[in-house]
Amino acid sequence: MSKLLKVSADPIAVVAEAAEELRSGRAVVIPTDTVYGLAVLPDNLELLYQLKHRPQDKAVALLVAAAGDAETFFEPLGPTRRLMERFWPGALTIVQDGHGVRCPDDPFVQALARAVGPIATSSANLSGAPTAATAAEAGAVFPAVAVVVDGGICRSAPSTVVEVTESGVTVLREGAIPAEAVRGAVAGL
Image (cartoon, rainbow, N blue to C red; front, top):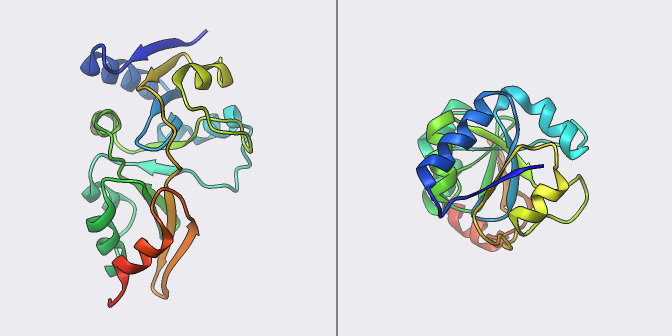
């Protein structure tokens, strides 16, 4: 049975407890600015794939506390910098050099990422199933996850995913940010 922690009750204590779970090699369910996510530290990706029944060839996003933290994974190209300046924090996942990184516009996730570093995450659902809109729904999907953080209802579209290469910018998945807005942000570079 999962322990449901309400962010609104005591945000500092909730961050501390979720961080301890992650550092201990366990998964947690967290709210983001888009949808609920199943989260682990990057060293524990195998657990995330097992819990979600997700094929390992499908990448997951790395959530960071601030745009500068993306530089842990890649040296941003010009279009990447432009997209980070325009849409971060926010619902844009940027893939460059094989790493998908996002800086969510959510104070809880930012605080958690400051506490533990980048967080590997994927939507809180079994692979191919609808995403849970509430913490209780997400907890029911993942009964083996001991800590579920309740941040209210998350019914937004998932993040938009773009890939940036030397050749240009490709929208891999249109989500909360329209593809036209992405193209407009990098036009003229």
